[in-house]
Image (cartoon, rainbow over all chains, first blue to last red; front, side, top):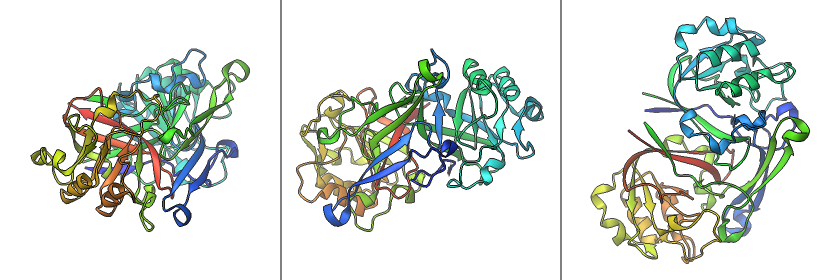
Length: 209
Length: 209
């Protein structure tokens, strides 16, 4: 079994959404003085690789701890979307229609993965257009992941998020997919067990034989 | 496939090590005012379920990002240690000698799991004595997990941590095992991808057929 890490590295230097940097690490004990190292961590629920729960955008949406972990674990397909220059539309996805199975997890590999995880925030990142989100809900997938800190921009009212969340498709943001090939894998994404929050930082891996 | 969550719930109410509570969540955006929810999270690298990297106690030890994830993923056995009232010694573990395989992950289920995850810190938690740690390094397991926020107390110089870390056995603390049966499982524990830290919060699950 091979494990491939597809998680965003987290440090003070990590790209912040819209450059709102909220990641900090405070050294509480250091080896020279205390003989032990300890650190406090400060970050956003949306820092790096993370899962958005429906309560992020829906008034009565479930919080992250109310979603069973089997929604973030299972068969996945990585689709090569690098030919979609600005946004991933219904048409972009329909070209892969026979590869997108109900109940599966779909990861979108775009040119976003060419960006360094410590670059300045890129407001023009490739995003999933509302039409693509609508298509994925019709396909009844269980989750969709993308290789940037957000899954949409430039769409008033956040229709991509709302379509996915109302359609019971989980949103995974902040994946790193530049080093992996398109194709089928077993995916495991485990968010911190945060009670009552609208999102949580997570670690995501691919497993292959 | 069945997924069993064995992670400590994280909230402001979560038990802190020695009652040094460092977990906080700040509401940055709320639905009524902003139409979206966002939260900042503050916690220790050792809050709730977490993995200690060798650099926690060893001067030149590896940090959490330097350890390959396959050390926290793989076949595991949950041992029933509830008959060991105060500490888990070499003798306690030797009673299970034929069940402890080289390269496997050993999880110690003790009476600690009877405590609520929001109880006051219990300084008398059941711990892995240095003799038990020495035994596990001799067995060449790849990781050991326990159902409390620490794996040792009352041992000057932290010999359990140092023995395990020098013996290349990863330490997983803060598991919740009261709801699972002893026996064999597939274990996945994924820490946040924290760069350069001596530990990281993690989510841990068991997978069974």
